[in-house]
Length: 265
Length: 250
Image 1 (cartoon, chains in turn orange, cyan):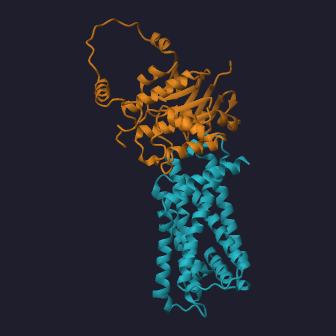
Image 2: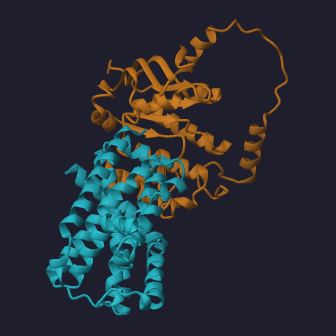
C-alpha cells in the first residue's frame, strides 16, 4: 500500500518546439482525490493523456500503480480509466449497449448484473434502452462516468468532468466523485474551477507555466497566503444558489437524476 | 485470442451503426446505380466495346466506384470516434490496439459487401448475364474483397489525420474518378496517347479487366497477377502507414 497510485518525476512534453510540461512532479496516494488545477492550456490534459498512455512524454517518468507508462502500457491500462473533457459515448447505441460494450472489452463475466447496477446507480435505468443521441448533456456525462467505472479500475482520471454541465449536472458529478472517494478509488481530477478542487480534493496541485508551482492540502495552501483579516460582509445568495433553490422547490425530486427535468440539449 | 474477442465486440458496435443508419448503404449504392442506368440506357448504345453486352462490360467499374465511395465512411467513422473522444477511451483501455482498427476494417468489408450485392442484383435485373463458374465467382469475390481491404486501409489514414469532416471524406473523390480514366467505361483504344498510356497502366484497368474476364467465364485473358499486385501493394503500404500514424497519434 505504500506504493503511490500515480507518481510523476520531472515529466516533460513538447509539441514541436512548444514546451507544455517543463518538469512536473507529484505523487498521488492510494484512495486519494487529487486535483490538478490550472488555467486553459496549462497542460492538464497533456498530463492526464500521458498518465493514461495516450501521449508519449518527451522526458521524465510517469508511474501508475508502480508501472511505467512508457514501457508497461498494457499493465497501466489494466488499472486505469479515463474520462475526457467531452462525454465519450457512442450516440448511436443505447446507454445499456454502451455499458455492455465496456463490460465486454474489460472481459467481465456477469455483464448484465454489472450494467444494471451502474444504470441504477447513475439514474439511467429509465433511459437505458434509448439512443444516447437523445440524452441531455448531464445524462450523457453520467453515462460517460458510468462507462469509466465498469470493471472497477484502481485509478480514475477525470479531465474537467464538469466541463459544459449546468449547475445541477455539476452537483451530480461532484456527488459521484465523492462516492468514488468514499469507496477508496484513487482519482486524478483536472479542473479550472477553484471551488471544485476545494470541494472534492484531498490534495491540490497548481499547474502553471508547465510546472507545479504549489501543492498540498487546502489548509497547507491557505498557509501560503497572508493571515486572514476578519471583515463583516452581508451574505447575498449567489445566482447559482437562487437557481438551485427555485428549481428544487418547483420540481419535487429534482436533482435525483430522473432526467425528466432535463432539457434534452 | 483477446484481439479476436475485442475485435468482435467492437465490430458488433459499428455494425449496429450501419444497421441503424442504413442511409450509409443507400448513399453508397445510389450514385453507382444511377451511373449504371445512365451508361447502359443513355450512353451505352453509342459505345462500341466489341462483342460484349455493355452492362457486362460496365459492371466491374461500377462496383469499384461503389467501393471507392463506400470506404470514405470508414474515414468518417474513425474521424468521429477521434473527435468524440471514443478513440481515446478505447486506447486507454486494456484492448489490443490492433482490435480497434481491425473492427473498422471488417465493418467496411461487411458494409461494402452489402452495397456490392445490391448493385449486382440490380445489374442482373438490367440484363447482366455472368458466365462464371463457382471457382471464377470465388476469384472475382476475392479480388473485390482485396480491393476493398486495400482502399479501407487507405481510408484509415485520412480518418486518423483529418482536422475536419470534409477533410476526412475528401480523399475518396480522386478514387471515385480514377475509373473514368481507365477501361471501366470505354475501351482505351480511342483515347489520345498520354491519356491512354495512363489509363492502361493504372490499377483500375487491371482490376476491372480481371473482374470482367472472370465474370464472363474467360479467365485466360485476365491480367490477374497485375490486379493482385496492385491491390496487395496498395493495401500493404496503406496498412503500414495507417498503423504507424495510429501508434503515433494522440
